[in-house]
Length: 321
Image (cartoon, rainbow, N blue to C red):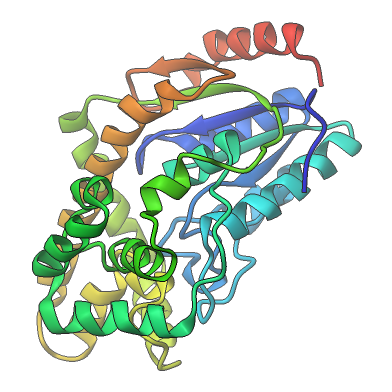
């Protein structure tokens, strides 16, 4: 699906706990916006607490789209999200509202702005072979095997990223071309003009907020959420089952660790995730064409709004809705 090329969109991006949701809400209220989720975990309806999705009260203040729309038994790929996001951008435009994408998943934002590779269907046999080899070798040795077929993909991926490692491998063995080669030729993409606010507070200063975020989740019902999710008996390789907190709280519920240790493990995992987000938003987003961005080197606070509003107004003057 293609959107009209004259649609301007606003992007609010940055690492976990930087204040994206609060900023996006303020922007939506100021500019008659519709908030469109660009977070790969907030799409799952089973993960409201663990992903700190907007509350029902917040959702009632401005339109929110693509939050909690997918069941945990399903997998939301970049392509699936992108198609849904373009539909919501079109709908916001038709309603005379400003589309505001908010989230910390850089690949979603990149896929929207740059387009995706048009891959052929991958046979189930190739997918099964990739997963079986990964199970046999383990992440590090499997990545070495992938490097023989797709050295660029192997160099970018960590041994623990099972989903992307096996995806790159199955594409290579099924098509005879590396995933990297396929991705060099993306499909045509709507020519959005994007104005982005990127929150990149100093990392050490963000750590207390990351730790506090986990504590709030525990107080808000994260344990009950994980218990209900685990009771469904879903496959552990599903994306929702890999959300921070599922494994850690699950270990405590199984009696394999203490509550305190589970919280500490969640906090550590959250900091690692935020580190990866810093790397992406500090580098990859700047490589995206048709993008005007303002980087804010601190957590969101209302004192930042005048400057941010000025940036958005200037952007919209050159690219009106």
